[in-house]
Length: 222
Image 1 (cartoon, rainbow, N blue to C red):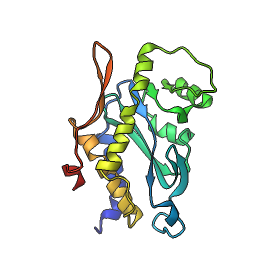
Image 2 (cartoon, one colour):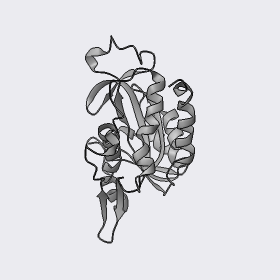
Image 3 (spheres, helix red, strand yellow):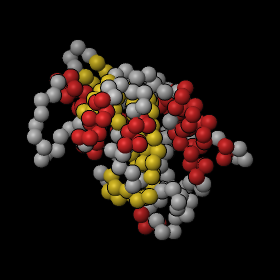
């Protein structure tokens, strides 16, 4: 416990440098909120008072952090970034960090729609593909890209797996160092386990999504 304050940086470097998945040219990105406390306890919360921030996701307002993971089509973690909750998904610094060594096609949700972001990534060899909004004009898309875009749920499955099974989100944190030490550990099943990991399967009939079969009584709850 005495050395836990010095452990976050080596753990993050180890996860980012030695336990990353191999880029395959196809990647999925999607941020997920990590709530620090209930909205009613924001003013009395002190642990992350100087670090966490209010943000808004598709599920509503929250107080805490945002996790920005990037995985390949095999469900392997390629990169991730942790930011306060009020940081936009299209933030230039965040996108540059998670796309630093990646090429090919990247599939995201409508929260990543930005012409400037698309042009900057395209100049670096990354094609950002998202669904369009109702107010936007329809555009032609390659059938393979359209099928892969439908399988973007793989990143949502990884985020749900981390928060529900690995307990990456809870309000029992007692210090910032404890949170940063445990966060890389929550990625342990995704990084080390090759069986229980969601991934996209390429078949002759098309694409399908393989999801992990892990119950709530699994060893990751311990």
